[in-house]
Amino acid sequence: MYLTLKPNEKIFLNGAVLRVDRKVTFELLNDATFLLEGHVLQVEDTDTPLKQLYFSAQLILINPEEAKQALAVFVELLKKTFTNFYGSRSFGRVKRVYLPDRKNKVFEILKVIRGLFQKEAKVIEKMLTSDINTTADVNVRNIEMQY
Image (cartoon, rainbow, N blue to C red; front, side, top):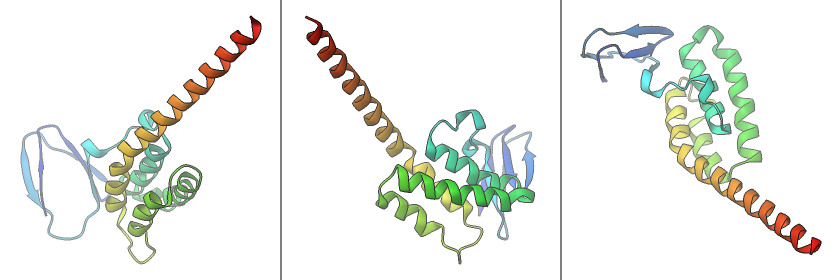
């Protein structure tokens, strides 16, 4: 697999952080876990359930020393997120990637979760719009009752 990095771009590779000073292309000749800087989510950006799930999965790649703890957090968040918030179809897409016999497939999990960010934004927007409309209806009824 060939990877191309831009000047000053970082890559998280097998727990190490590398930064290149110029555009560079290199080939990975064996299995390696990596995450490009552009796909790294910062903690302050974890403002939705899926982003929190993504963040916990990315920690498995970025910090292998604490991968076991990060995996436990990921599994717990996975259960809560999809049982409480999302439909079984979305859960199925993540579950297909997260199978016990498919170790070191965190990159695939991140890709699937990233693909659900847009759907999540729509769900949250609908929920907020619904809450605003419900609140507005209640306020209008209260005003009408006063007169």
